[in-house]
Length: 251
Image (cartoon, rainbow, N blue to C red; front, top):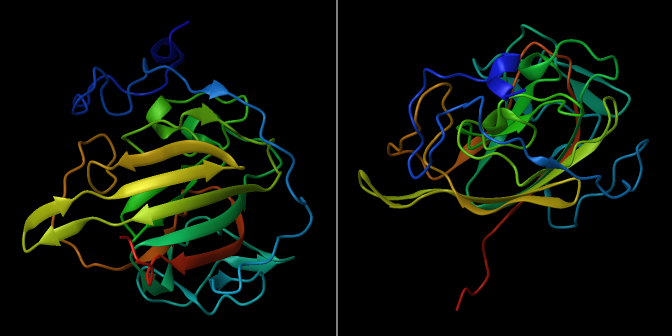
């Protein structure tokens, strides 16, 4: 049965540039499923590299605030930070541009809902560009909204999800867009590994994330925060750090 017949996706959205598919197209093929390698541990997060900037160490939430600038309302316990639904998205106080990011997350062990209503959250680079967080373990949804999708633009190459409740990891190489005044010189470029599996390789983003609309670039600051989304599901996060991609000789 086609995805659209299952009630997945939309058919009233614009066609993506260079594609035959619409934004959130229910008929876009699902990523094939692969089994990720064994995690180092499901009980304990690993250590960040010595030169990393730690955004969340499992205990201290002082580096985060809600997007309105208010104090953190999400729950911190047992080495993780958990979404408190309806409190809103949170932002890192530190801002960055080109970088390597590591973040671990877990969807609720108790399965509730389906499609976009199951373990939904998101990781927004510079507060604007979303790598989708979703429980897509045996849970189909529209392809450009599945786990690790560059939401509304590119599905992941494969579905590397672990079971609900198990810890998962994103490792992201991020190069932000470059502008000359109001003119876009270079689009944002992103590489993503989900549980050690490459799911995007040097993908050029079409602009900041949108829902049911085409993305487009507008001039923006060279740095921005990491934003974690409150989408109404109690998703957990731990072991969040980044390394600025600076100080090397590209020649």
